[in-house]
Image (tube, rainbow, N blue to C red; front, side, top):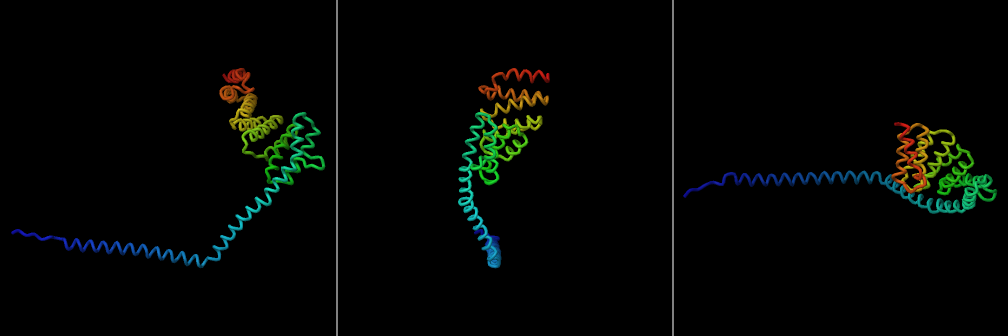
Length: 253
């Protein structure tokens, strides 16, 4: 009867046991390394515990400070500021309707009892009310033909409101145009036109087109006038827009 030997069986088993021992040893080394790292981290934490606790305390105090400042300083200040502004806002509305210089001065400077917009900016700086007062001041100075102050205060105003922000930017353009600084006026009109709303966009596209014509940027002008025709066909600026498109096109052909 033929017989055969199971060659290498014993050696293979021994090899498997060796590999298992190596794996166990490697795993043990990993855990030892982790233990060492954890121990070092723990030692560092223990050594620097006072510093860590101090940092945590500082952060906590900062958060609490911001909360307290917001709720017990800023909010009451905002409310007081808007209450104070009521008189000047009312006079602003009246002044714009009748274009009256005396009322413009009341808006800016108050009446001795009620604060004007300029005092609002000084006394309530950093509040939303003071920010809005800068807008009112800039618009009043524009009406009074004081274009430098108009630019100054409107430039200090900022708003996320699409229409209000566009009006402020476009009014800076108006002030520059009155100062014959047409490149600056053009820049602000273009910027104001980009808010993409049916109220202010056609107004400032049209003004950008007119200033572009003055600056001999005829293709640009044609583009602004064409945008009014295609995007804002129901606006007042679109009424005779074909004539402006033709004039701009004829100027460079």
